[in-house]
Image (cartoon, rainbow, N blue to C red; front, top):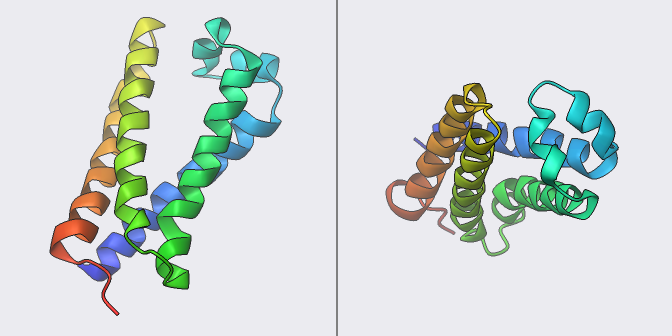
Length: 127
């Protein structure tokens, strides 16, 4: 179970890192032109970059607390925050008629729920 939780957290962290780098450093106009970027039309540059920074923090929060053994409870807390972010992403994609991305966001939410449940209940980090 521990290995499965590490793999799930690692995959989410990689996803968050890629999304965070993209949203933080790629110009909004270029994001809007990409597949699935229609949601940026009504969003300010600051909002998009803020989401990017949150995703970068999520990438760190899913891995570093456990690896460094400093407040490892932040791993499931970060997973719960990721779940909230995915709910927002699903709502946003629904509003912009990008329903095909909702299934993907739902899958990410499910993986985050697994990490949160696993690290809070089933296989918490212990010293």
